Image (tube, rainbow, N blue to C red; front, side, top):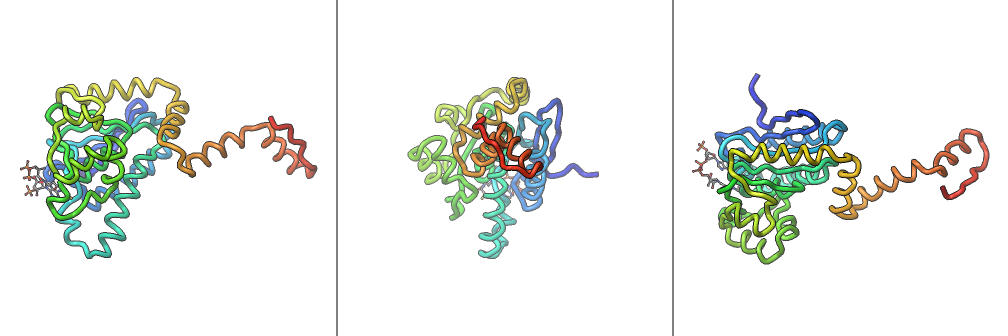
Length: 254
Ligand code: COA
């Protein structure tokens, strides 16, 4: 059986998602997007997974959307399917319950950088280049880049990167706060696994709650937290007991 274009492996509560189309520098095609979507389903439900690593095989993390694929779409297909699928799937990765660490092993361009920006943290191998080359093709970073990049590094630097399309070296990216740490390529995966292990040893619910809190009060997250809290109160138990016993509830505020 051939290796899938995106691969999921789970070892000791750490999941590793690997973009695996090295001959095309892990450019994202429709099949890879669908596979990323299916893997997000799995990770969302995987209570045994505490940290997720996201990386690429070969000399690229990911060089963005597959230019040959999207350029053959009609404008309607581009808007309705390609761009919206990318938004939806990258948002799913951003909203995974577990911390997501992008492990940038090589070129991180365009949609690849947008995917990395959906992660909670980014580690990069020394010498890795990051860029948003879209304007060089006459298009825009359309999978969240114009929003997530300025959120992370500020409008001014984001504009510099996006307007120019110029490549930024990992060391500059680290200075800008675009990547958390830079290390020699040979040490990258070992360091990512050590950091993942450090996080995985902590209280998983506490870690996941802090992720939701830091990412801010999106209504759905707030509702999920509030719903969980409310369902564990004595009043909720009393309310259910009263319903079963066909009597009025005696709420105490506990
Ligand atoms: N979409 C589709 N295929 C891509 C691709 C992309 N975004 N980026 C690279 N590839 C393919 C190339 O066509 C080539 O395929 P081939 O061997 O069948 O011809 C293969 O990946 C290797 O790329 P190549 O350009 O030969 O490698 P390189 O090391 O000389 O250059 C880059 C690397 C990243 C500088 C260069 O590939 C590049 O600029 N890619 C486009 C990045 C981009 O614009 N991304 C935004 C897309 S919206």
